[in-house]
Amino acid sequence: MPIIAVSNQKGGVGKTTSTLNLGAALREMGKRVLVVDLDPQGSLTVAAGILDVDDVRVSIGDLMIARAQGAPADVTEAIVTSPCGLELVPGNGMLSAAEITLAGAADREAVLTATLAPILDRYDYILIDCLPSLGLMAINALRAATGVVIPVQADFLAVQGLAQILETIGAVRGQLNPGLAIYGVLLTMVDGRKAHAQRVVATVRHSLKGQVPVFDTEIAQHVALKEAAEAGKTILAYQGGGSAAEMYRDLAREVARAAGDLSAQAEPRRRGVIADATRFLRGLTRSRGSLTGAAEAHGA
Ligand SMILES: Nc1ncnc2c1ncn2[C@@H]1O[C@H](COP(=O)(O)OP(=O)(O)OP(=O)(O)O)[C@@H](O)[C@H]1O
Ligand SMILES: [Mg+2]
Image 1 (cartoon, rainbow, N blue to C red):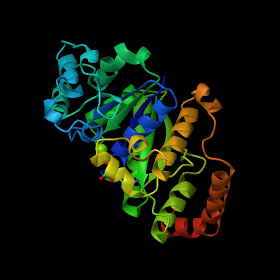
Image 2: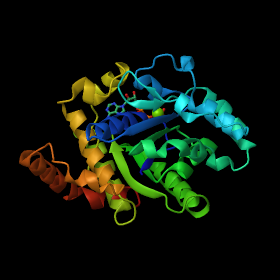
Image 3: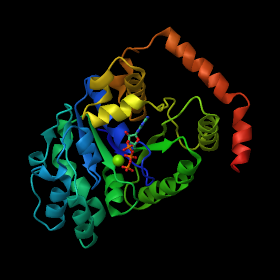
């Protein structure tokens, strides 16, 4: 069963937005989905419609502290059906306390793995929204995961951090979780009208080619995604017929395929021939000319 860590130590690259909406799109495909908020900021919890993150009864931080102290609590106590409709294990400031407690625990990288173990058979997908760091909490997510989705903002500075997370994934594979896959790098907040964004997209695709998978689906800059989070809704509920929702549906199909979820491959495509043609044309513009120049400019 796929357990997906949505991770990048870089802040504000679209981890939380992607966790929520990818989760919603997988759910729309008929999958049983759980999302876990592993960020002390509690952004996923808020975006899922729970406004007071300190008011949650049991958070993932509480569970991890209990386990690290040798007195595991029942994870099902923490699962809530959030106002946005997704099943969620909420997160809040307790995660900061948890990270400190973990440091002294036995098997400290595997506390999240052990915490989630009792509920694996209840879900088809578990998505973990990671905090912007590669500390012990993020390592717990990479240890628990079957694969990683790495959102990268289409911005040159954001791309710089990519090497660091790829290195960390390599180290986790070597020491803790040999089967850890990279389901894909996800380009987010792509502003198709800006030449800079196009260059970054081209550079990422070019420099990772043949080494690290990059999803074909790109998440465009779209104000509806901000508005949906503010309203505590998924993009599918907020503007289900719009292009932002459609991007996450496309992503969900790609992620399912990358995760080896064969039942997802038979899903009918929602977009028809026109969308395919548009993508084909976009692909052409992308590959024509821009790749080499951008790659050279960034020393790739
Ligand atoms: N495709 C998009 N278009 C427009 N705004 C977006 C998009 N994706 C995310 N945002 C907005 O950008 C901000 C950062 O996104 P998000 O919270 O998902 O990033 P993050 O990587 O989870 O951040 P952090 O590292 O702080 O956890 C949010 O305000 C979010 O609503
Ligand atoms: Mg976040």
